[in-house]
Amino acid sequence: MANLMNFCRVTTTFSANGEFDEDAFRQYLQRFIDTSTGVYLGSGGIGEGHTLTWEELRRVYRVGVDACRGKVPVYANVLEQLTARDVIKYAQLAVESGVEAVNFYAAEGRHEFKPTDIELTTWLDAVLSAIRHPTALAAQPVVGYPVKAEIIADACRRHRHVVAVNLTGVPDSYFLQLREMIDHDVRYYVQVTGSLNMLVLGAAGILGGEINIIPATYRRYIDLFALGRFDELGQVYADIKRYLAYTSRWNPAPTRWIKMAMKVLKLPGGEGGIREPYLIPSAGELEQFTEGLLRLRIPEIEEQARAAGLRIPV
Image (cartoon, rainbow, N blue to C red; front, side):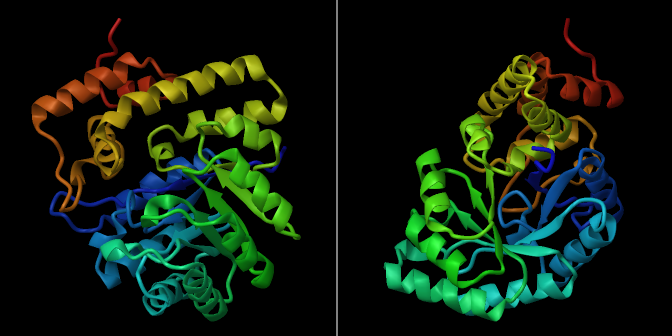
């Protein structure tokens, strides 16, 4: 229980002129160091990785490694691609930049591509044979199709440098299947919704992009679980679920509301905003978002709001 660790797919900070802001990124990452939260850098979604140039992505990795290594785990969330060749190229950049581990999604389901089992197994073999570095595999339908537990388990068995499996968008029965099929120690990270069951079953912590805004709340959640203080844990879980329910109206791409929250709470990089094709909503919508966020009465959000000079509603 003492080794539970959360991981956040961290956003990338930009300056007012739209360039990658290294100073803001260091300040932003300190929030995760302070809460013992591992980071995934350069994610294609929340990290806006697909909008970064090759050199910007290199800088994101190198600044993140310099800021976090030796303090919290610092991993790369390798951009999903259709071909193994392209994924290997991006993974090599991350490894050369010093990240401790790389996360791979399955082959991207572009133009309705849905790989057969043998196609996906061959794809994973090519990637994992080329990148002999500590690796996490993401078992989630973000690529456009479900990935069978048998395929993930087979990849883990044959490539022992796979050290973790990230499970979001799948039921706890999927987790149980993997545990039964994988014959060596692999850490499992799960989404917060329904996480209590999977933490009891042996999950190693929580993974999610929504941790960007309230990392201390998520840290408290797993600390209370480890301590067995379930009455207090229930209240924290309720806070998180209300937070997720409120922000869900800006999904399915959480990048928008995360950047909105960064802006109104004046977090490092918040003024730099978001990159196309995303756009920050209008001033009126931003005001409504702020009012609703503060009405959640989540202690960590209120603390950040006070620091930003916002008035907390009575």
